Image 1 (spheres, each protein chain N blue to C red):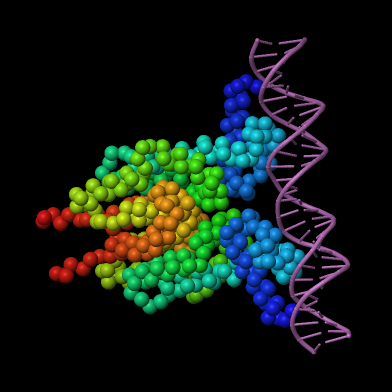
Image 2 (cartoon, rainbow over the protein chains, first blue to last red):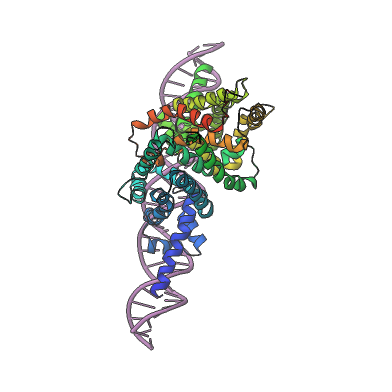
Amino acid sequence: MSPEEKKRTEEIIIGVAEKVFIRDGFSGTRMQTIADEAGLNKALLHYYYRSKQKLFYAVLKRLAPKLFAPVLGVLYEELPFFEKIEKFVHRYIDEISQKNPNLPLFVISEMEKNADDIIPILVRAIDSREISPIEIFRRDMEREIKAGNLREMDHKQLFVSILSMAIFPFVGRPLIMQLARFQNHEYDLFIQERKKFIVEFVINSIKIQKTGVE
Amino acid sequence: MSPEEKKRTEEIIIGVAEKVFIRDGFSGTRMQTIADEAGLNKALLHYYYRSKQKLFYAVLKRLAPKLFAPVLGVLYEELPFFEKIEKFVHRYIDEISQKNPNLPLFVISEMEKNADDIIPILVRAIDSREISPIEIFRRDMEREIKAGNLREMDHKQLFVSILSMAIFPFVGRPLIMQLARFQNHEYDLFIQERKKFIVEFVINSIKIQKTGVE
DNA sequence: ATTTGATTTAACTAATCAGTTAAATTTAAT
DNA sequence: ATTAAATTTAACTGATTAGTTAAATCAAAT
């Protein structure tokens, strides 16, 4: 095979592995399943990636930048604070909807079970810049509070609230569907409508209304 | 052994099994682990509960009412809407903090992987009353909107938002700790402070301020 | 003291799965 | 055509684990 062919096989494997790992989790994934879904055989998987662990890490390393960069990147843009929140929420929900709605639960579950191995890989993707995302967020808030546009509040509480509202509908889908009595087909629409809701909900809560009178 | 002794063994097994299942998940749990942590042997586990599946279901059936009743129960109480939200959030975070912070992720993961078996068991616990919790919530909102105390908005979006803010810090702990740069010991305090934050945050967002002038 | 049921011990089976190996076959490049 | 690398096949090993079994021991009730 040509080197391009070789590369393509490698990519087929890692692409299918990504899909299966996200769907079934690390321990739920069978090498045989990956081989089957890739239309290849188990021996070839080990020929390219020596072990299940190594294949998993290869998947994670490829995934990590795609996972955080597009969303966290918004925090580093030069934007008015409230617009930044809007763009952040929309970007997150759009990305996950389009990419793979099971991604958040996968990342969280594996971080929980496998902390020591996985967290360092993900942290490199989170901490790719000089200043951390949460510190950027804190500074933005500080500026807005001084300008009288924002109520004073703990920046981590606000940050986690926005994250929670955006991420949890993906993670907690089966639970939410029962509690809030959703039909299967309703849920996607609910998530799309959620973008606008979250932004309005958050800004309503934190923004100080200018009276106009002064 | 006396019947009391017998009962005690049964309870030791199911109690330890609950702890282990929640910690390691169904497929991550080994019968040997349960036996070891209960100070018993594997044969006895099968003597009382015939299989891992049956033991798991027994755990779930015992868990389900304890899981939802104390929290959802608040929704059925006769309380002013905003106080109800406050009590709901405090109750949820207090219950989970004290009981087992891994519970939400466990429930969600197992619902996701094992939907057909598990959801019916949990749904019986959610739907123990004539009117569903979400319908109660909708009626409360409708009343408050008519009374001019509450902005108009989709009741499911609001309900999911409150749930998200309360549950996600438990589920997403490892991710949040990285993103928001928490040290281990800070997180418990953060969650305790979160009760007040969520209530204020939500009410600020949804309440219509009476001008006093009228 | 005898009986009954609870519990232990230890060895076993059967299934699953990661990983290995070696030989055969295919493909592309030279 | 020859070579080298890619791919397949198929059988294997070794580890893990749920579940079984049978014999032995123990404790409580009668």
